[in-house]
Amino acid sequence: MSFVGPLGLSVRDRTLEADTQAGLTAVEEGLLEATKSEVPFITEAAQHLVRAGGKRFRPLLVLLAAQFGDPHAPGVVPSAVVVELTHLATLYHDDVMDEAEVRRGVSSANVRWGNSVAVLTGDFLFARASHILADLGPEAVRIQAEAFERLVTGQILETAGPRDGRDPVDHYLDVLAGKTGSLIAVSGRFGAMMSGADEAIVSILTQYGERLGMAFQLADDVLDIASDSHESGKTPGTDLREGVATLPVLYVRERAEATGSAEDRELCELLAGDLTDDARHAEVLRRLRAHPALEQARRVTVRYAAEARSMLAPLPEGPAKAALEGLCDAVVHRAG
Image 1: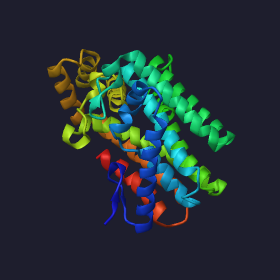
Image 2: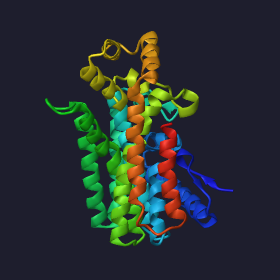
Image 3: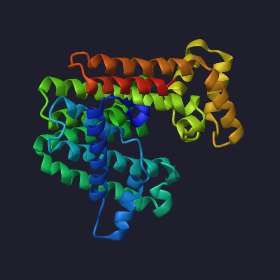
């Protein structure tokens, strides 16, 4: 028997399985505790997404990284709670910015209570994460502050778009490094650091997390176009409908400019149109699935996952390293 975690990760070692399960249970309890308020309405709003579930990908990475030191060290679980609280807070804010209606299979907070409550609830979660961080020491506070700055910078860059003369693909990869890579890098860093692992191991797991985070987000881009809703658990073409130009779309535009192909130009015109129209949306999705740009984006996803995996080479062999390698494989598998 093996524990199956986020992305279908399989942990086959009994001791690691027990540690990971116990750690994730403790994180869940920590999340519920951290989202309690003396004001019942705030508790309800703050626990809205906690109770909706989720992959808990970041806490899992904290727990696996902690295996390279003392996995039961007192700072491990609180730091996993911090990264998940930070992630959840950004989801409240993202849903307001994207005008999203559903998150994790439930109504988004902005639909349920309005934009103001959703934004303020996100702020409340940031405050609670900071409160926990204060007990983990000034170094942890500094690391989290730097990661949060990168995360917000990524979000601003996405909103502003590439400056004149900047390659849109490079700009997009910078956005992802900030928005997604930064917090997943901190997950690896906190796990190793809080467990008392060597500095060299902390550095390796930070770099691993950054690249894994990129691969994770790029796999989502591919999935959004390539999968049906049964596979991915979400409606295909959601990013398209919301007008988000993900990597496959950017590659279509790049090819249209480079080749001048009538077919590619026509697809670009369709992409620039109103994709809330179901017929147009279905046609764009059909064309993108058959377009070489999708395979191009898939190759970039695989490259980042391979880079993440190669980062692990100096680590000692064992179940924890195998599980981290398994996460790379799981991300690639998601991207098809």
